[in-house]
Image 1: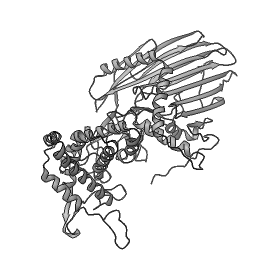
Image 2: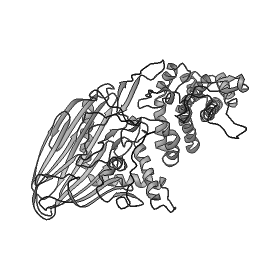
Image 3: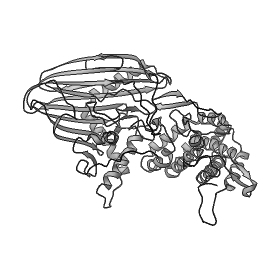
Image 4: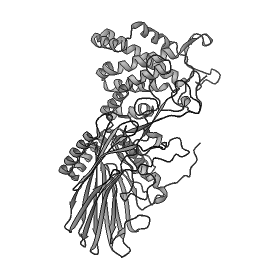
Length: 575
């Protein structure tokens, strides 16, 4: 069991609010938690709720869904069928950093004399806002207002509106807008959810350049050979005189604005940030995409981005809001925060899955599990069916690797990975990884639910049926008819959802789910054969399925052994 100090947020710092998560004062004791709670993401790009100053920070974090490094898994004692290659999401270049100096004094929250502090995650607007009133050692009062968004409409784009005003004097002000690629890797802790540390440099630099207010950096990962390009650009509004200087290196870039700030006159900086990744395109091409995204963002402006964000979330809340009528003062806030996390994790995750921690941190290494189909997909099916379909299409894109995985463990059909980013099994612990065969049925459960609710039979026929055939083949091959169980179809050597009781026989959850998988596969193939001959022929061409197999699936399903204790009158977890 993981033991850690329990830290409860005080009500006077984090008050109840139906649509906002509010922090009324700088509260460093909860820094690790609030960096997660105040995170912004759109399903493709995620940014932890770090302060613009870059420090203090428990864990700096910017993540792109699916962008990962691979590494060889080293076992004390290897066995055939064990996963060979690990996958870990990469903490990419941090572009959120904006450092502030007044009279050459740095604005640093732990030591600053804060006359006012408020930070707000606005779940209706999709922004992270902060207002600070800072009194410098010289007695100058400085207002700092920022608003951050990770765009839902433009998934490669994020932006920060940053305004500084010296209220009671004139003063030299420096605003340093930066992007930094830290290569240190994570320090492993005794928490199995944490990402492993890398012993090698992950991001190898390619092109880097600075021009006017713009900086672009690009990289290729050491082992997975994925490419990344990221860039920043800026616009300025002020009546105070200022100058700027830009520079960059392989792992850093900054645009430094030096302002002769006049009393009461704001310096308003808008920072645009973009990220592009690929499994195949060269870094040079991604740099071109980065340039185009920045050109469009600067031309569009922050207010238009804000309006687009509002439009997207208005539509989401219209379809998805759950109104709370209980007595808990934070009940509505808690429900909406969780709903907001769903859209942040899934909204623009086209071509990828939903990581177990969303894009809020390195937990579980950015892997996709069964959670997506069992917990998240049902909600999305009713409220955002397009997103639900994208998640199922992503699973279909893994099918060839799932076939290969089944072959590796000497099974027919396809075996989807228990935890993965790229479609290959990444779990280094067989008993609580590959042995959780129920992942196959979990995905097919999601498919069945999607088709039942949406009526999207075209997707079922064109992609879903192929997955159903291959998963049914695995169950038919994995199980056997046991004389000891009265000729019932049994499944041995699997792990159910309880990962503390592993490699068991006839796990009730697994057997029930496998039965439904087999039934749905048989019914789908029979329906295609009778009513959609062209699609049935296409399915046969892709899978080689024949009707004798279908009869075997039906027989296995109807003969499935479901444990039951007649004395206690309950279904035990397993035999």
